[in-house]
Amino acid sequence: MTPFPPIDSTVLQAVLDTFEIVSRIILGLTGAVFIARASLLVIQVEGAQAFSTLVRETIVLLLSLSIFPFVLKTLIAGTGQVAALIRFEAHSRSVGAIDGFIESIRTQLPLFGILADVGQLTLQHFVRAVFSLLVGLLAVATPLVFFSGYILGQGIGVAAIGSALLTLCLWPALWNIIGLFSSALWPSFQGTSLSSVVFSIVVTLLQFLSPLFCLALLRQLSPQSALHSGMNVTSAISGRFQ
Picture (cartoon, rainbow, N blue to C red):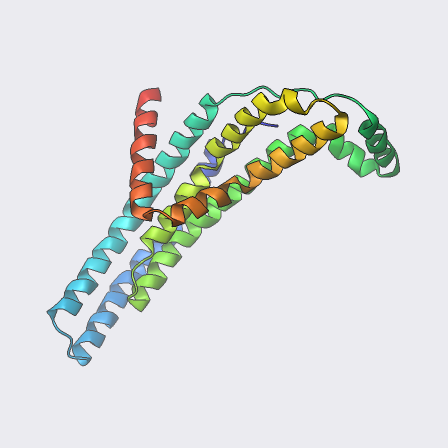
C-alpha cells in the first residue's frame, strides 16, 4: 500500500502549455465556423432563437477554453493537498510459505525478482506516469471535444468534460483514502502470509479502479453541480495552504 505520488509541477506546466497551443488553434477556427453556421441559418431562414443559440454557444466555447487551465490547476492542487493530508503507514507483512513460492519464481525469472525488489518504487513511478498521461490526454482532448460539439451545434460537452476532470483529479484522494482504510484493516489479515499477499493485491486493484467508482457515482448526480461543489472545496483548501 503506497501513497499516491503527487504530479510533478513541470509535467503539469507542460500539459498546460500543450493545451494553450491546441486552444489557440481552436480559437483561430472558431470565427470561420461561426460565419459558416450563421450563413447556414440564413439559408435555412431560421428565426432569432437559432441565432441567439449560436451566439450563446460561441460565448460558452470561448469562456470554457479560457477558464479550463484555471479549473485544471485548482482541482489538481486542491485534491493533491487533500491526498497529502491523508497519510497512512505501510505495514510489513508476515513471512510464510508463500515467500518460498515467490522465491522460486524469482530464481527462475530474474526479471520478476528485480521487479519484486523495487516493487513499491516501481508502483509509484507507474501510478505517476499513468496519472500524468491521463491528465495530459484530457487537457489536449478538451478543446477538440468542445470544438467538435460546437461545429455540430450539439453543445460543447462541458458536463462530460467536467465529470471526467473531477473523476481524474479525485483519484489521488480516493487512492489514499482506500490506503488509510486498508491500513486500519491490515492487522486483521496478518494471520497467514497468503492472506496478507491477497489483501495487498486486492487493495492495490481497488486503488487503481477507484476513479471508475467515482465516475459511476457522478453519473447518478448532476455533473455541473458535482463540478461546482468540487471547485468550491478545492478552492477553499488551496486558499488555506497558500
